[in-house]
Length: 317
Image 1 (tube, rainbow, N blue to C red):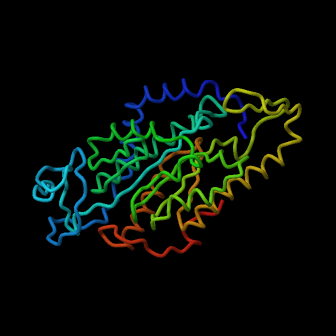
Image 2 (image 1 turned 90 degrees about the vertical axis):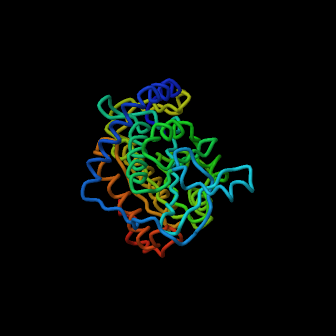
Image 3 (image 1 turned 120 degrees about the vertical axis):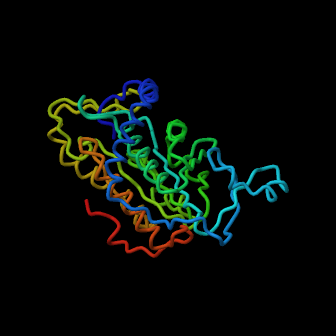
């Protein structure tokens, strides 16, 4: 369903990586602007009731290391008390080749906007005391906003295909999984988005899908002759008069968006939509508030998955 040629998405990805410091600064500014008036949902205090040991992550305070438990293993462990234990969030920006495209020069690539939202959300969660990871080969996780750049680089290295990699994404039981992308791989595929999302949520994992779209993928502005290209820059269809295809395009795109929404609903996950011509702040705020509400329902330590009202968690589109 590509609307135009995606000219050398590898070069576009490298350019995005080179701009990472700027994107992190933009993400931090967005997170700071939203942080005012937002309150953390976790209780403050050292705690006293032991909950679990977990592997040490670079950046963890060394005074939380349990040396007796670590001495019995080849790994270093942190001792967590019930009130201290952060919830684990896994953020997966699916930067497929189709994400490096926009319909106009003044509209950012879907990949750029996806990365900004992902980093800003991670910043908000980390400053609320949570643990945030992504699905690169190392399964990078951080507990401090000081290591945000490390996480951002790991996000760039995460798989760019859901159907091929969802089965290998073992986030951990009762963690939260957030997937952001255009989900175009499901348009002309026998793969069901429902199956892929259920795989990600199979260990009672709460989650959310953010459908990132270019405005032309909702309301195509094209007229006359239009060449449809795939992500390898190969022509797949030529329209001599796009006006004759416009309504069919709209209906097909509507069905595609509904499939993604239904996949989230089947898994009791939030589904939100972000259009790259609009501000990212409303999407970020809605996503963060949803996560905060879910954690408030399930308890301050994030153990457990609350019941969800399906009608109230998916906004109609």
